[in-house]
Amino acid sequence: MREDALLNRRLATVLGWSALASLAVLAVLGLWVAPPDAVQRDAQRLMYLHVPAAWLAYLAFGVTALGSALYLWRRTRSPVWDRIAGASAEIGVVFTALTLVLGSLWGRPVWGIWWAWDARLVTTAVLFFLYVGYLALRRIPGPGRATRCAIAALIAFVDVPIVHFSVDWWRTLHQEGTVFNEELKAQIHGTMAFTLFWGVLAFTLAYVYLLDRRYRLEALEEGREERELEQAIAERVASGDGDGSGGAGALVDSGAPR
Amino acid sequence: MTDAGYVITGWVLTAVVLAGYWASIARRTRRARRTLPTDQSAVPPGESSHP
Amino acid sequence: MNLWRETALVAGKDLRIEARSRVTLYQVLPFGLIVVLLFAFALDPSRGVLSRVAPGLFWVAVLLAALLAVSRSFQVETENAARDGLRLSGLDPAAVFLGKAAAIAVQLAVLEVALGAGVALLYDVELRSLGLLVAAAVAATAGVAATGTLYGVLAAGLRVRETLVPLLLLPVVAPVMLGATRAWEAGLGSASADGWPWVALLALFATLYTSIGMLAFGPLLEEA
Image (cartoon, rainbow over all chains, first blue to last red; front, side, top):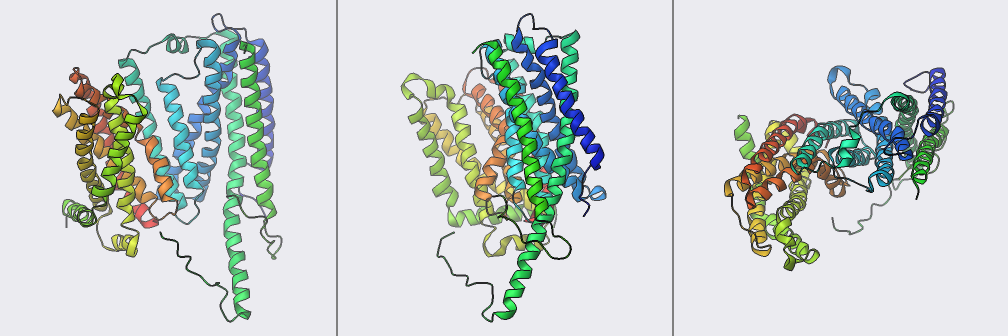
């Protein structure tokens, strides 16, 4: 039985190995080749993970939103888009959590803080919870799942820029522009810039590969629920034929109040 | 913890998370494939599905 | 029937149910007041902390009460296959959305007046720029009611509705929390001019989510 996937087997394998190789190269670049920062010294090296992870956290969410929109639009409606949306969301929540943790690990040695209430961090934290809500919704089976999830994804998606804008405005009004914010905007050149770019590239390869694999799983699991349901119905029918009292089982009222 | 400590923690954590997540997908895929029907006779569903 | 008549019809139905059952009045409102009281236990009233953070606490209490109001609004639709009735009634789904959201908003408004009085009394704050406070409250309430109704119908037929809606709703209304609190800080303090831009943000949010709600309610009601 040919499985449903986004990429063909060979391409997926090549992609997987490429992603792994480029991540290994990133480690060499980030931990060894790139020089320590003038101000942040070695702690800077976490940036080569944190920024690509953040990029992916948002990219994955964009893909979920896009998939949701394409699913809802009648002309492009297809379970493929629903699966892409769902798959990308799970990958996204992983990368969002990673982004937040790496951000704390980076912030602590450099600025002495585990957390800061700036627009980027707060929006990423909100993004995490938006993902968690979406995934909770996704676990609920039923015929309406794809539509429910798609609409929920879009509701959440339009919220993200509003959150970012409002927090940003709030912080600038309070003039909380600390050294933290200024340094984040600092320019980086040369090997450091290349390493950062490489990081984004490596993570993106990993994302596409994981998306394909997660998509396959989504397709398999969908089918599984249907198959298990058919199986259960077949068994019920088979047992009901020989058993006059009806195989539905006595539905005893447990008496539990609603 | 020294600066290097934070850096190593971050990189190791990232590697563990990525590898772990990939492994999680692989494990769930294997389990899902096992419940595929072979020929016409349906393979009985495996252990109860995920919570 | 046009959109507004249908909206009024649905809102009237929900408000009549409330008038007869008095759930919002006798359960949700006391809940809100208890939350206001609990904050005082958590923070020290004697050191002036409460009056400083009063706007934030007020809006947290309103938001928590709103969760109950939304839950109640869709609870009434689960009995006697009322949802099927709504679907088959021939009413424009956008009107059903607006009607339910309006009913929630009215109930929240009553809550806010009561909680606002509670906060003013217990936390010792003065309501200075009433216009700003009311404008912000109207816009914030509209935004919360619209978004709450949207998630309410999304989760309407689901068994885990009670735990799911808070998880879905709260992150999305974070900007409302932010804007409403900032506007009220300005309204209770001296720099009231700072509050009006936040009211604009709240109005934008309310408009956006009302529009989304009018579009999405139909498909969601079908699936519920």
